[in-house]
Structures are given as structure tokens and as C-alpha cells.
Image 1: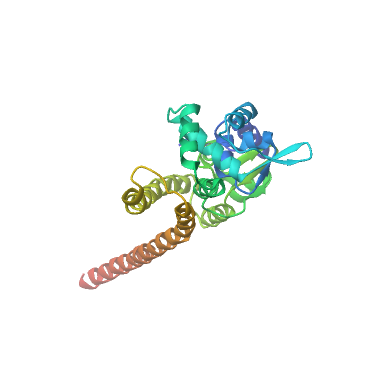
Image 2: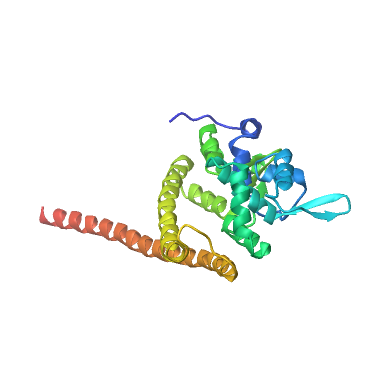
Length: 283
């Protein structure tokens, strides 16, 4: 595999080339710490335009902002609605389709409940606070392991995000785990390759959980529709409860499999040593 050594300057240049493309998409997907936005900030975070935000408001698709003096302040409620609108547009629905759908759903129901469910469903599952590091700190952490190819893969996976003269780290825990594993002797390129495989497997597990919930709790009760009245709050509460439950199940199963796998490694090596000892004694 080709490797290209980096310096803090070259890291900055490489990451700057990514600004406005995949890196910005990742920021929009992961960012969760800001709960109030100006219209410019809201549009940027939702990966849309100010013109679109105003158009959605005019068409009744987006609730009006809170007025503070002459400024309009938007919240995560607006961000959630924008993300849903964006996803429906990508699936080929028109703004008229979306307006009719939302109007039909909201009719006779508490709008705050509807928006509350949207926030719960579209908000990130992890409450881990992101951190920032400099390009020098990134290089100090991974040294010669950090090549342009590895750097681009880390950005593609969403583990580091360039923001001007610093790097946003959405999950400091993952960064620290990477530091420890690399310090222990695991090549960073191989580690990222393995993480990419893990993400694929985790996606399958998550999809399985979601399909189970959809079939047993939504399809059987609402068919192709959505909850109404107080059931909206019940579904929102359930979605919040299922997050730590899913984490516990996956963590417990991962721990169980790791215990067995690590034990197998030790036993296999001991067995090999015993076999070699017996063979030498026989001779």
C-alpha cells in the first residue's frame, strides 16, 4: 500500500481540500451540541440553503422561529423537520406531497408532540461531547502511521472533521482507543480497515433491531401509518428507552464473544506449546 508521510502543514492542506464535501456532510450528520441556530447556521447544519428554509416556512412545512428582537432563533425541532423534509425530497416526493402528508398527520393532534417525535427519531443516539485537536496533536498521536491515505479514510469514516485551523473529533473515546491500540503496535491503516468492517456488521445488527421494532410495534398496530394522539408520546418515549437497551445488549454480547475468543487464543497457544513439548520428549 502506498504511503505518503505527512507534516502538520500537509495535513492542513489535505483536509482543507475536503472542506465543503464529505467533511461538511459528516458535520451535518453528527453535530448535536448546538441547540439554537440563526437561519444561516440552521441551513448549514441541515445541509440546505437559507432560501430553502424560508421557502419551507412560507409553505407551512417548517414552524416559525422564536423571535428575539429582530432575530429569528431556530432550534433542534427545526433541524429535525429539515432533515425529514430533505430525506423525503431525496426519495422523489414533492413539497406539495410533503405538506399534505404533514398536514394530515398533524390534523387534530398536538403539534408539539409531533415535532417531539421528529426530534427523538432524527437526533444522534450518542450524547458524547465532541472535542477539538490541532494538526500537530494529531501528528503527535499517530506519528508515522498517519499518511494521506489513512487521513482520508479517517475523514470518510467520520472520525475526524476539518474545521478551519483545527480538527473536530466527534467521538473522543474512539480517538483515545485508536491512540492506545496504535501505541500497542497495531498499524493505524489496518485498524481503520477493521473498523470499516465492524461498521458494516454493526449496521446489519442495527437494521435487525429496527426491523424487529417496526414489525412488532408499528406494523401490527398502525400498518403503514404513524401513531396518533397520546400514542405519539408513547412511541417517542420508547425510542429513547430502546437506545440504552440496544447498547446494553450489543455490549454484553460483544464482551461475551471477546471473552471466548481471547480465551481460545490463549488455549490454542498453550496447546501448541504442549504438543511441541511432547514431540520433543518423544524424540
